[in-house]
Amino acid sequence: MKNRSQNITRRVFLRRGAGGAGWLALGGISLAGAAQRNVNPFAYDLQRVSKTDPKLVSYEPAGRFACPGPGPRRLAVGPEDHLYIAGRNGVSVVDGEGRRLEEIALGAPARCVAVAAEGTVYVGLRDHVEVFDPKGRRLAAWESPGKKVWLTGLAVAGTEVFVADAGNRVVLHYEASGKLAGRIGEKDKERHIPGLIVPSPYLDVKTGRDGLLRVNNPGRHSVEVYSVQGDLESSWGKATASIDGFCGCCNPVGLALLADGRCVTCEKGLPRVKIYSARGVFESVVAGPESFPENARAGALQDRSDGLLGGLDAAVDSQGRIYVLDLVGGDVRLMRSKA
Amino acid sequence: MSEESKNGTGEVPGGIHRRRFLRDGARAAALTGLGGLLALAVERSAGAGTVWQIDPQKCVRCGNCATHCVLEQSAVKCVQAYGICGYCQLCTGFFEPAPNDLNTGAENCLCPTAAIQRSFVEDPYYEYTIDERLCIGCAKCVEGCTRFGNGSLFLQIRHDRCLNCNECAISKVCAGDAFRRVPAAHPYLLKTTSPF
Image 1: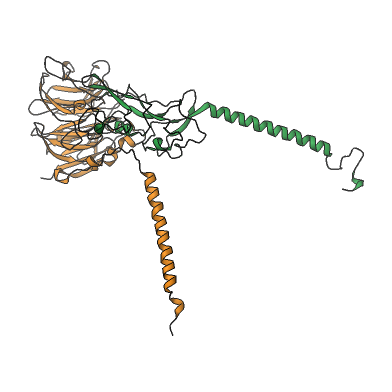
Image 2: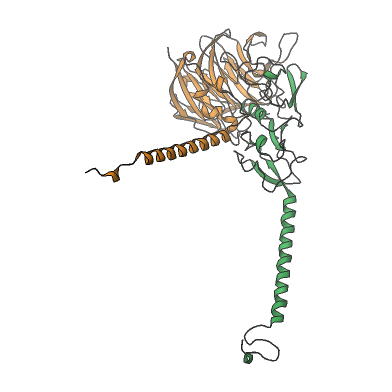
């Protein structure tokens, strides 16, 4: 005999079905309402430029490690491909895998660093340069070059040291003894130098094998090429959020040079690392904004609301690999060419 | 109550006289009322001594300031810290993230109400000024400036407009928990840190 109590009638089925559909509809409306309430009608939309075309990415991650000290600002590659990371407590020396080798402790934050071929370490503090031997012993503390000094970049070539002073919008040319030999990049109509525009403390300088200096001019969204005597040889770069230019109000914020003269640029706001030819033609992407999610949100983080602690820096080792320092994430990525 | 329990004074043995009870009761009521009035006065005085303000270090530019104020046009306005501003030619608080050109064409401008005035200073510097009559406190410019620039644009409650509600409607929905009461004598939380 058929047990009807375990079955339901068509009417009950329809009634329950209608009830279920009603609840589902109510839930949907409620969810849609909640989603609508959370949408910011005034959102700053960077979606279109935040994604990198994978075809343009020519490097891949080969390693990653946390900086040994807090507040990293700049990094440089020294002899034996050791990394020198300038940070809040001084300079940390690590090997390619992040193992700490040495610590140069300072009484104030180190803001930039460069290492000579024989191992002498030049460290930029806010307003002066200090020099250390390869063992980390202080050799000298140079006199501050003046008022409003805010050192943010360093480069060394042979016996010459170049110091980027963002506060005074100039690159200072020093002899290894600490004697000031010249000023580079200042506005000069007769020499056709437009002058450096540095809205925030991110002026960098690098020396190439061709004997020329590369200096970022963030307010003009360009990289300028100077002779050691301070003549402006060329400049390149354009302001655009597109991948082939420099985004935001003031980029690039960091530079590195590959052995063949190609230039590695670092940007903030839309954190990305790219490679340009020696003449300034965009070639490829080392890492796009999706690689640095925390850095991209730098402005949204508490106590980092000025964007002044955002940004990236880069350095190239003897094998042509690129180390990328994430100032917000506090870590270093090793990127190697896919080729 | 039995007759035997009453004495000549009308007091109840082991109890209190009705007159005294009423007198003591009236006194207690008066003291309670006075205390209440005093507490109310203190509370009102404290309320008058503080005002709502936004902590710019906590603001996450959620857009709620523009949409949740009880006023038709929000009392929250963008303000400019000129000492922090880079006077950039390409101001990311003024221009869309990918502008067609660096001019004041509406299609290039970020502000939905054209409340930011851009004026030439000298090559390549421009000054950016907020027209508070037009600003609705949406924080779109604040996000652009903070993300790419020095963060010189930020939101503040303007006290010539704010009604100082007991429970600020924006504070209840603020995504960054940035609203707090501050002494009326120091009603603004300004950014002062220069990039240099």
